[in-house]
Image (tube, rainbow, N blue to C red; front, side):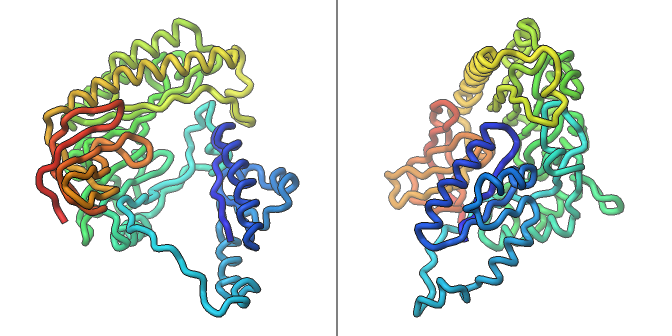
Length: 394
């Protein structure tokens, strides 16, 4: 069974998911395998996809029970398995360095541009016992870092049990203990002093906060709160609580009604905010969202022009952040080892999240995947950091 996990958030992700399904169809059918498509795109467009792609054997959406049932049924007893005297060899996979732990799903915010509530529904908390169970499983599999994810992680709380402060403390106290704890997607109005204190005690100095824009008028049309001044106040509080923190954000360029002046306001904010990284989304109208029918739709060419300009401004600021690390000590979690001291190991420092940020290249040490190296930053290239190794930890 070949399984494709799809995304339905924006049009580019939908197109990429469909291309992946078509590629997997060819791959699977050449080998006599079946193909299953799961995930958000399937959840929202199951009937249309099934009509257009009859070669897919199983459509699961967000409910994976049908997939699990199909796997149990085949479980080595299908026709393909009966034709072999022994099981096919399974390639050995490296032990994970990072474990993702979902602490919530869905969203109640109803931002005007966002299709997540249409796909995943209202906000739901993953209960503490399940979060801790998932964390233990990731650590037992070899993960050194736990990354807590959800559409609105700063909101997590379980009545009668506690909030993020207790959850972080309990995760940090697990055996074996994670080397790093990281939270992604902290909504700005959920970052209060109690959360910042908990982050300072238990997590890496990294804050991922989707600000989306700096114009109060644009944010109001988005169904969000705040403006550039309040964003800067928030960043000042974050930096006071977490010295040397890396702040990552996301922004939308070309939202309906965005004027030249409002876009200039966003550019000015980005140049002042001192962000370590940020993603830029050209506005992409999604069917069923309020923003898709708002007046003042910005021409597509101008949307992409503004997105490119915003990306350049972010890059210019971020480069200064990473260059300023030169000479500073770093802990680097190794993701690709070096067999000899003269080789180059690849990993991440605590200021870099997996998959979305840059990497750290370490010279001067023989080291294995999953080890932590104490190093000194020697320079940077874009979002990547160069470092010279000191000692290492098992």
